[in-house]
Image (tube, rainbow, N blue to C red):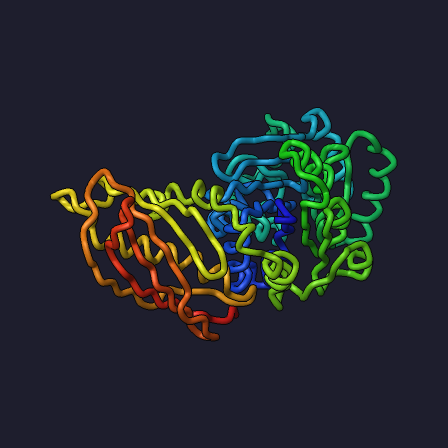
Length: 410
Protein backbone atom coordinates (compact mmCIF):
# COMPACT_ATOMS: atom_id res chain seq x y z
CA UNK A 1 0.00 0.00 0.00
CA UNK A 2 1.17 3.52 -0.79
CA UNK A 3 -0.25 4.91 2.46
CA UNK A 4 0.49 3.57 5.93
CA UNK A 5 -1.18 6.23 8.09
CA UNK A 6 -4.54 7.97 7.70
CA UNK A 7 -4.72 10.97 10.04
CA UNK A 8 -8.17 12.39 10.76
CA UNK A 9 -9.34 15.53 12.48
CA UNK A 10 -12.50 14.69 14.42
CA UNK A 11 -15.04 17.52 14.82
CA UNK A 12 -16.12 18.80 11.41
CA UNK A 13 -14.19 16.04 9.62
CA UNK A 14 -14.72 12.51 10.93
CA UNK A 15 -18.01 13.51 12.58
CA UNK A 16 -21.07 14.96 10.87
CA UNK A 17 -22.98 17.88 12.37
CA UNK A 18 -24.82 15.49 14.68
CA UNK A 19 -21.40 14.51 16.12
CA UNK A 20 -21.69 11.01 14.69
CA UNK A 21 -19.68 8.83 12.31
CA UNK A 22 -21.93 8.05 9.34
CA UNK A 23 -22.44 4.45 8.23
CA UNK A 24 -20.62 5.04 4.95
CA UNK A 25 -17.64 6.63 6.70
CA UNK A 26 -17.50 3.86 9.30
CA UNK A 27 -17.58 1.20 6.58
CA UNK A 28 -14.83 2.89 4.56
CA UNK A 29 -12.57 3.29 7.60
CA UNK A 30 -13.04 -0.31 8.74
CA UNK A 31 -12.23 -1.50 5.23
CA UNK A 32 -9.15 0.70 4.85
CA UNK A 33 -7.76 -0.70 8.10
CA UNK A 34 -8.14 -4.19 6.67
CA UNK A 35 -5.75 -3.14 3.89
CA UNK A 36 -3.05 -2.34 6.46
CA UNK A 37 -3.54 1.43 6.80
CA UNK A 38 -3.50 2.56 10.44
CA UNK A 39 -5.79 5.31 11.69
CA UNK A 40 -4.72 8.31 13.74
CA UNK A 41 -7.38 10.53 15.36
CA UNK A 42 -5.86 14.01 15.79
CA UNK A 43 -8.06 16.37 17.78
CA UNK A 44 -8.17 19.17 20.28
CA UNK A 45 -10.41 16.96 22.39
CA UNK A 46 -9.12 15.28 25.53
CA UNK A 47 -8.37 11.59 25.26
CA UNK A 48 -11.64 10.60 26.96
CA UNK A 49 -13.58 12.49 24.29
CA UNK A 50 -12.01 10.33 21.56
CA UNK A 51 -12.29 6.92 23.21
CA UNK A 52 -15.85 6.13 22.00
CA UNK A 53 -14.81 6.71 18.37
CA UNK A 54 -11.66 4.62 18.81
CA UNK A 55 -13.82 1.70 19.95
CA UNK A 56 -16.38 2.17 17.19
CA UNK A 57 -13.63 2.20 14.56
CA UNK A 58 -11.95 -0.86 16.16
CA UNK A 59 -8.65 1.01 16.17
CA UNK A 60 -7.43 -1.09 19.10
CA UNK A 61 -7.54 -4.15 16.84
CA UNK A 62 -5.65 -2.47 14.00
CA UNK A 63 -2.82 -0.67 15.79
CA UNK A 64 -4.21 2.87 15.61
CA UNK A 65 -3.16 5.97 17.56
CA UNK A 66 -4.76 8.93 19.36
CA UNK A 67 -3.29 12.43 19.13
CA UNK A 68 -5.25 14.39 21.73
CA UNK A 69 -5.17 17.92 23.17
CA UNK A 70 -4.14 19.33 19.76
CA UNK A 71 -0.92 17.34 19.84
CA UNK A 72 0.03 17.34 23.51
CA UNK A 73 -0.31 13.54 23.69
CA UNK A 74 0.19 10.46 21.53
CA UNK A 75 -1.51 7.33 22.85
CA UNK A 76 -1.62 3.78 21.47
CA UNK A 77 -5.20 2.70 20.88
CA UNK A 78 -4.64 -0.93 21.83
CA UNK A 79 -3.17 -0.63 25.33
CA UNK A 80 -3.33 3.08 26.21
CA UNK A 81 0.45 3.49 26.36
CA UNK A 82 1.50 7.16 26.19
CA UNK A 83 4.20 7.53 23.53
CA UNK A 84 4.59 11.32 23.74
CA UNK A 85 3.43 14.00 26.14
CA UNK A 86 3.92 17.74 26.63
CA UNK A 87 2.33 19.68 29.51
CA UNK A 88 2.03 23.25 30.79
CA UNK A 89 4.25 24.21 33.72
CA UNK A 90 1.84 24.49 36.71
CA UNK A 91 3.69 27.62 37.83
CA UNK A 92 2.14 29.46 34.87
CA UNK A 93 -1.47 28.66 35.84
CA UNK A 94 -1.88 31.55 38.36
CA UNK A 95 -0.84 34.00 35.65
CA UNK A 96 -3.39 32.54 33.20
CA UNK A 97 -6.10 32.67 35.84
CA UNK A 98 -5.23 36.29 36.72
CA UNK A 99 -5.61 37.39 33.10
CA UNK A 100 -8.84 35.44 32.79
CA UNK A 101 -10.36 37.14 35.84
CA UNK A 102 -9.17 40.57 34.72
CA UNK A 103 -11.07 40.16 31.44
CA UNK A 104 -14.14 38.53 33.03
CA UNK A 105 -13.47 35.27 31.19
CA UNK A 106 -14.08 31.75 32.45
CA UNK A 107 -11.26 29.21 32.41
CA UNK A 108 -11.08 25.41 32.41
CA UNK A 109 -8.76 22.47 31.93
CA UNK A 110 -9.04 18.67 31.78
CA UNK A 111 -7.81 16.01 34.18
CA UNK A 112 -8.58 12.28 34.19
CA UNK A 113 -12.37 11.93 33.93
CA UNK A 114 -13.36 15.49 34.83
CA UNK A 115 -13.25 19.07 33.61
CA UNK A 116 -12.00 21.59 36.18
CA UNK A 117 -13.35 25.15 35.90
CA UNK A 118 -14.12 28.31 37.84
CA UNK A 119 -17.56 28.60 36.20
CA UNK A 120 -19.61 25.41 35.96
CA UNK A 121 -22.64 27.37 34.78
CA UNK A 122 -21.10 28.56 31.53
CA UNK A 123 -23.07 26.93 28.66
CA UNK A 124 -19.96 26.48 26.49
CA UNK A 125 -18.15 24.71 29.29
CA UNK A 126 -21.14 22.49 30.03
CA UNK A 127 -21.37 21.56 26.36
CA UNK A 128 -17.64 20.77 26.26
CA UNK A 129 -17.97 18.44 29.23
CA UNK A 130 -20.98 16.72 27.68
CA UNK A 131 -19.23 16.19 24.33
CA UNK A 132 -16.23 14.58 26.00
CA UNK A 133 -18.05 12.46 28.58
CA UNK A 134 -16.57 14.41 31.50
CA UNK A 135 -18.03 15.43 34.83
CA UNK A 136 -17.56 19.06 35.90
CA UNK A 137 -15.67 20.09 39.02
CA UNK A 138 -16.02 23.76 39.96
CA UNK A 139 -13.30 25.49 41.97
CA UNK A 140 -13.45 29.21 42.66
CA UNK A 141 -9.68 29.31 43.22
CA UNK A 142 -8.86 27.62 39.93
CA UNK A 143 -5.06 27.73 40.08
CA UNK A 144 -4.91 26.56 43.70
CA UNK A 145 -7.04 23.52 42.84
CA UNK A 146 -4.64 22.41 40.11
CA UNK A 147 -2.08 20.04 41.60
CA UNK A 148 -1.09 18.57 38.22
CA UNK A 149 0.50 19.75 34.98
CA UNK A 150 -2.36 20.23 32.46
CA UNK A 151 -2.06 19.45 28.77
CA UNK A 152 -3.91 22.68 27.95
CA UNK A 153 -6.08 25.43 29.42
CA UNK A 154 -8.99 27.13 27.69
CA UNK A 155 -10.38 30.62 28.28
CA UNK A 156 -14.05 31.15 27.52
CA UNK A 157 -16.04 34.24 26.54
CA UNK A 158 -18.70 35.35 24.06
CA UNK A 159 -16.72 38.58 23.61
CA UNK A 160 -14.72 37.62 20.52
CA UNK A 161 -12.98 40.98 20.35
CA UNK A 162 -11.73 40.68 23.93
CA UNK A 163 -10.50 37.12 23.32
CA UNK A 164 -8.72 38.25 20.17
CA UNK A 165 -7.07 41.10 22.06
CA UNK A 166 -5.73 38.74 24.73
CA UNK A 167 -4.57 36.33 22.03
CA UNK A 168 -2.50 39.04 20.34
CA UNK A 169 -1.08 40.17 23.69
CA UNK A 170 -0.10 36.66 24.68
CA UNK A 171 1.49 35.88 21.34
CA UNK A 172 4.00 38.63 22.18
CA UNK A 173 4.16 38.15 25.94
CA UNK A 174 4.32 34.34 25.99
CA UNK A 175 6.35 33.79 22.82
CA UNK A 176 8.63 30.80 23.37
CA UNK A 177 6.79 29.84 26.56
CA UNK A 178 3.21 28.96 25.57
CA UNK A 179 1.23 28.96 22.33
CA UNK A 180 -2.29 30.41 22.04
CA UNK A 181 -4.95 30.11 19.35
CA UNK A 182 -8.76 30.27 19.03
CA UNK A 183 -10.40 26.87 18.50
CA UNK A 184 -13.93 28.30 18.52
CA UNK A 185 -15.18 31.92 18.45
CA UNK A 186 -15.68 31.59 22.23
CA UNK A 187 -12.58 29.48 23.10
CA UNK A 188 -8.97 30.69 23.41
CA UNK A 189 -6.68 27.69 23.91
CA UNK A 190 -3.32 27.76 25.69
CA UNK A 191 -0.92 24.87 25.01
CA UNK A 192 2.77 24.08 25.58
CA UNK A 193 5.09 25.91 23.23
CA UNK A 194 5.62 24.18 19.88
CA UNK A 195 2.74 21.76 20.32
CA UNK A 196 0.43 21.32 17.35
CA UNK A 197 -0.93 18.44 15.33
CA UNK A 198 1.79 18.69 12.68
CA UNK A 199 4.74 18.60 15.07
CA UNK A 200 3.27 15.71 17.03
CA UNK A 201 2.46 13.84 13.82
CA UNK A 202 6.13 14.26 12.91
CA UNK A 203 7.09 12.61 16.21
CA UNK A 204 4.79 9.66 15.47
CA UNK A 205 6.07 9.31 11.90
CA UNK A 206 9.67 9.23 13.10
CA UNK A 207 8.85 6.64 15.75
CA UNK A 208 7.11 4.40 13.19
CA UNK A 209 9.63 4.98 10.41
CA UNK A 210 6.91 6.37 8.13
CA UNK A 211 7.68 8.94 5.42
CA UNK A 212 5.55 11.91 4.29
CA UNK A 213 4.57 10.09 1.11
CA UNK A 214 3.06 7.31 3.22
CA UNK A 215 0.73 9.64 5.15
CA UNK A 216 -2.67 11.04 4.19
CA UNK A 217 -4.32 13.63 6.48
CA UNK A 218 -7.85 15.05 6.39
CA UNK A 219 -9.09 18.15 8.20
CA UNK A 220 -11.37 21.17 8.01
CA UNK A 221 -9.96 23.88 10.28
CA UNK A 222 -7.17 26.43 10.34
CA UNK A 223 -5.56 24.39 13.13
CA UNK A 224 -5.33 21.47 10.65
CA UNK A 225 -3.36 23.34 7.97
CA UNK A 226 0.13 22.43 9.18
CA UNK A 227 -0.99 18.81 9.59
CA UNK A 228 -2.26 18.74 5.98
CA UNK A 229 1.06 20.18 4.83
CA UNK A 230 3.02 17.66 6.89
CA UNK A 231 1.30 14.76 5.11
CA UNK A 232 2.20 13.63 1.62
CA UNK A 233 -1.50 13.94 0.74
CA UNK A 234 -3.37 16.69 2.55
CA UNK A 235 -7.16 16.63 2.11
CA UNK A 236 -9.44 19.55 3.01
CA UNK A 237 -13.14 19.07 3.71
CA UNK A 238 -15.58 20.67 1.31
CA UNK A 239 -16.93 23.10 3.93
CA UNK A 240 -13.45 24.28 5.02
CA UNK A 241 -12.42 27.91 4.61
CA UNK A 242 -10.67 28.85 1.40
CA UNK A 243 -7.49 29.49 3.41
CA UNK A 244 -7.51 25.80 4.36
CA UNK A 245 -8.43 24.48 0.93
CA UNK A 246 -5.61 26.37 -0.79
CA UNK A 247 -3.10 24.57 1.44
CA UNK A 248 -4.44 21.09 0.61
CA UNK A 249 -3.57 18.71 -2.22
CA UNK A 250 -7.17 17.58 -2.62
CA UNK A 251 -10.60 18.85 -1.60
CA UNK A 252 -13.33 16.34 -0.76
CA UNK A 253 -17.01 16.77 0.09
CA UNK A 254 -18.28 18.19 3.39
CA UNK A 255 -18.73 16.26 6.62
CA UNK A 256 -22.48 16.16 5.92
CA UNK A 257 -21.78 14.49 2.56
CA UNK A 258 -19.44 11.73 3.81
CA UNK A 259 -16.36 13.67 2.75
CA UNK A 260 -13.96 11.39 4.63
CA UNK A 261 -15.50 8.26 3.07
CA UNK A 262 -15.35 9.77 -0.42
CA UNK A 263 -11.69 10.71 0.00
CA UNK A 264 -10.73 7.29 1.36
CA UNK A 265 -12.62 5.48 -1.39
CA UNK A 266 -11.01 7.55 -4.15
CA UNK A 267 -7.48 8.03 -2.84
CA UNK A 268 -6.88 4.69 -1.09
CA UNK A 269 -9.45 1.96 -1.68
CA UNK A 270 -9.77 2.46 -5.43
CA UNK A 271 -6.05 1.66 -5.73
CA UNK A 272 -6.08 -1.49 -3.62
CA UNK A 273 -4.96 -4.58 -5.52
CA UNK A 274 -5.34 -8.10 -4.21
CA UNK A 275 -1.60 -8.66 -4.39
CA UNK A 276 -1.19 -5.82 -1.88
CA UNK A 277 -3.58 -7.21 0.73
CA UNK A 278 -1.36 -7.67 3.82
CA UNK A 279 -2.34 -11.22 4.77
CA UNK A 280 0.11 -11.38 7.69
CA UNK A 281 -1.39 -8.17 9.07
CA UNK A 282 -4.96 -9.47 8.71
CA UNK A 283 -4.05 -12.75 10.37
CA UNK A 284 -2.41 -10.95 13.30
CA UNK A 285 -5.30 -8.51 13.78
CA UNK A 286 -7.90 -11.31 13.75
CA UNK A 287 -6.38 -13.21 16.66
CA UNK A 288 -9.13 -12.12 19.08
CA UNK A 289 -12.01 -12.56 16.60
CA UNK A 290 -13.78 -15.78 15.58
CA UNK A 291 -11.24 -16.30 12.81
CA UNK A 292 -8.38 -16.18 15.29
CA UNK A 293 -10.18 -18.31 17.85
CA UNK A 294 -10.59 -21.05 15.24
CA UNK A 295 -6.97 -20.77 14.09
CA UNK A 296 -7.90 -19.67 10.56
CA UNK A 297 -5.04 -18.11 8.58
CA UNK A 298 -5.22 -16.50 5.13
CA UNK A 299 -2.51 -17.86 2.81
CA UNK A 300 -3.34 -16.45 -0.64
CA UNK A 301 -5.47 -13.69 -2.16
CA UNK A 302 -6.34 -12.67 -5.72
CA UNK A 303 -9.51 -11.23 -7.31
CA UNK A 304 -10.58 -14.71 -8.40
CA UNK A 305 -9.23 -16.94 -5.61
CA UNK A 306 -8.77 -16.86 -1.84
CA UNK A 307 -7.11 -19.57 0.24
CA UNK A 308 -6.89 -20.17 3.98
CA UNK A 309 -6.01 -22.93 6.41
CA UNK A 310 -7.53 -24.13 9.69
CA UNK A 311 -6.24 -26.74 12.16
CA UNK A 312 -8.38 -29.64 13.29
CA UNK A 313 -7.88 -29.41 17.05
CA UNK A 314 -9.80 -28.91 20.29
CA UNK A 315 -11.27 -25.67 18.88
CA UNK A 316 -12.66 -27.10 15.66
CA UNK A 317 -13.30 -30.82 16.24
CA UNK A 318 -16.35 -32.75 17.39
CA UNK A 319 -16.08 -34.83 20.60
CA UNK A 320 -14.79 -37.86 18.67
CA UNK A 321 -11.97 -36.01 16.93
CA UNK A 322 -13.62 -35.26 13.58
CA UNK A 323 -13.72 -31.77 12.05
CA UNK A 324 -16.90 -29.93 13.07
CA UNK A 325 -19.18 -28.97 10.18
CA UNK A 326 -19.92 -25.60 11.76
CA UNK A 327 -16.23 -24.73 11.88
CA UNK A 328 -15.96 -25.72 8.20
CA UNK A 329 -18.77 -23.33 7.30
CA UNK A 330 -17.09 -20.55 9.31
CA UNK A 331 -13.88 -21.19 7.35
CA UNK A 332 -15.78 -20.94 4.06
CA UNK A 333 -17.49 -17.68 5.06
CA UNK A 334 -14.15 -16.23 6.14
CA UNK A 335 -12.62 -17.01 2.75
CA UNK A 336 -15.58 -15.72 0.74
CA UNK A 337 -15.83 -12.59 2.89
CA UNK A 338 -12.27 -11.52 2.10
CA UNK A 339 -12.79 -12.37 -1.57
CA UNK A 340 -15.83 -10.13 -1.87
CA UNK A 341 -14.07 -7.33 -0.01
CA UNK A 342 -11.22 -7.49 -2.52
CA UNK A 343 -13.43 -7.29 -5.60
CA UNK A 344 -16.20 -4.93 -4.48
CA UNK A 345 -16.06 -1.26 -5.45
CA UNK A 346 -14.89 1.39 -2.93
CA UNK A 347 -18.43 2.69 -2.40
CA UNK A 348 -19.86 -0.80 -1.74
CA UNK A 349 -20.18 -2.98 1.35
CA UNK A 350 -20.59 -6.75 1.50
CA UNK A 351 -22.87 -8.67 3.85
CA UNK A 352 -23.06 -12.46 4.11
CA UNK A 353 -26.46 -13.67 2.97
CA UNK A 354 -26.42 -17.47 2.61
CA UNK A 355 -24.10 -20.43 3.15
CA UNK A 356 -24.79 -24.08 2.35
CA UNK A 357 -22.40 -26.99 2.42
CA UNK A 358 -22.10 -30.57 1.25
CA UNK A 359 -19.86 -32.57 3.59
CA UNK A 360 -18.20 -35.31 1.55
CA UNK A 361 -15.70 -36.90 3.93
CA UNK A 362 -14.07 -36.31 7.31
CA UNK A 363 -10.89 -34.66 8.52
CA UNK A 364 -9.37 -35.85 11.78
CA UNK A 365 -7.76 -34.15 14.76
CA UNK A 366 -4.11 -33.31 14.13
CA UNK A 367 -4.66 -32.44 10.46
CA UNK A 368 -4.81 -28.95 8.94
CA UNK A 369 -7.46 -28.37 6.30
CA UNK A 370 -7.11 -25.96 3.37
CA UNK A 371 -9.98 -23.93 1.94
CA UNK A 372 -9.90 -22.73 -1.68
CA UNK A 373 -12.52 -20.15 -2.62
CA UNK A 374 -13.26 -19.25 -6.25
CA UNK A 375 -15.75 -16.69 -7.53
CA UNK A 376 -18.50 -18.23 -9.67
CA UNK A 377 -20.77 -15.17 -9.99
CA UNK A 378 -19.80 -11.52 -9.68
CA UNK A 379 -22.99 -9.49 -10.05
CA UNK A 380 -23.95 -5.95 -9.16
CA UNK A 381 -26.00 -7.03 -6.16
CA UNK A 382 -24.43 -10.33 -5.15
CA UNK A 383 -21.29 -12.47 -5.24
CA UNK A 384 -21.39 -16.26 -5.26
CA UNK A 385 -18.32 -18.18 -4.11
CA UNK A 386 -17.56 -21.87 -4.25
CA UNK A 387 -15.29 -22.95 -1.38
CA UNK A 388 -13.75 -26.42 -1.42
CA UNK A 389 -12.12 -27.69 1.77
CA UNK A 390 -9.33 -30.29 1.52
CA UNK A 391 -7.27 -32.31 3.99
CA UNK A 392 -3.47 -32.06 3.96
CA UNK A 393 -3.48 -35.04 1.55
CA UNK A 394 -5.85 -33.19 -0.84
CA UNK A 395 -8.90 -35.29 0.01
CA UNK A 396 -12.08 -33.26 -0.48
CA UNK A 397 -13.87 -32.74 2.84
CA UNK A 398 -16.62 -30.26 1.92
CA UNK A 399 -17.89 -28.22 -1.01
CA UNK A 400 -19.61 -25.04 0.17
CA UNK A 401 -21.56 -22.33 -1.63
CA UNK A 402 -21.45 -18.82 -0.08
CA UNK A 403 -23.65 -15.94 -1.29
CA UNK A 404 -22.69 -12.40 -0.31
CA UNK A 405 -25.00 -9.41 -0.80
CA UNK A 406 -23.42 -6.30 -2.32
CA UNK A 407 -24.89 -2.96 -1.24
CA UNK A 408 -24.08 0.68 -1.85
CA UNK A 409 -22.88 2.64 1.18
CA UNK A 410 -25.27 5.31 2.40
